[in-house]
Image 1: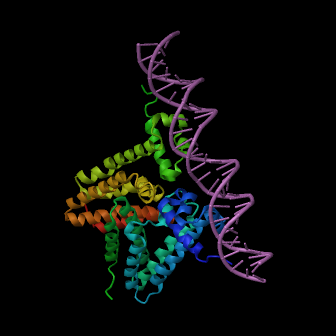
Image 2: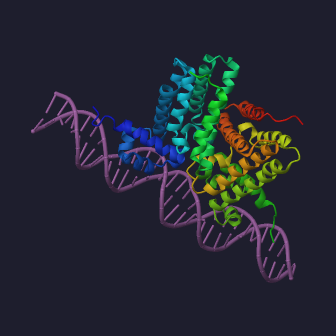
Image 3: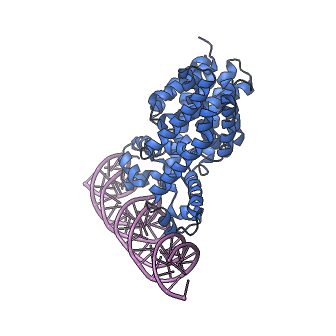
Length: 188
Length: 188
DNA sequence: TGAATTCTGTACCGATCAGTACAATTAAAA
DNA sequence: TTTTAATTGTACTGATCGGTACAGAATTCA
């Protein structure tokens, strides 16, 4: 069937990086081609739907990654406090201390927000809800847990903006630590 | 000299709105023209430098507005706690409970970040520093005040992202109130 | 081997981009 | 009113946009 299985998969992560760095409109086919190492012909062979399909697949992949690496551990880990601490480390690594942006968050501020409204809302809601579950398992009442979760999910996005705005990598981890301390997690 | 003084000034605020809604690259001359009500000829008459000059002037105007309405009150108001409370109200109105985005924050996430790095960094640093001064005047030690100020400036950006992502206007004011409560401001 | 299929580079399309040129219009100044 | 300068609409430029067409190369399968 496919001549080089994995070429498409590799392309997706490369395309994701181009969308991250340049946004939806700034991610021209020239850049997508250069970033993925695939010519225009190949790009349209793997993604016949063009940019729309590429970005849809990228968002899908991001959602799957976060579900597996972040949301599910928060919901089901034996130790919710450890899961939250682990989340902070995972997030710092994923966003490279703020050098990498959140594609979903950037989309939320851009003019493609309406077009991807559903995917954007689902991503943030899933994160907030998973974190809220972990906090409830630590004994917080649901309304408090929701509030705290919302505060942290938003806070992470704000830390990304501020770290990039002030060109201060240390800011990101500092913000994560502040948020973690605010939760007053039990020692394990 | 000028036939209609104020036309240029009005155009600037209209252009700002277009940049806010569509970003730098998405703000095409067609949209800038439609948004400002000025034809292409007039636009280049008032802003010979083209888009670059338009956005520079817009950023300048935003900086002036915040300096006057937010930063200076934080630094010099008789009652710092009241100034901070007032800031929250001003910010909620300015950003229309998250329906309006922060142009500077959006730029920080976009690919024009490097181009406007200086203006972006100055805006955020000025905000953080002004807020830190107010907190220091409330008795917080400088390192603590800096930390708290950084937390809030970033938090506001995060609240903007989250409010738009979840399409939840109430979220924005809720986040502002959370942050205000966190500061434990003295009653006046 | 040969046939079928997957993959890729290139040439091309119409639309739109930012920006320029400039004549026509409008209003202020003399 | 005449002169001068500010303002505006329109037509145009070359570059680039996303997308299409398709022939040929590469690979798998029979």
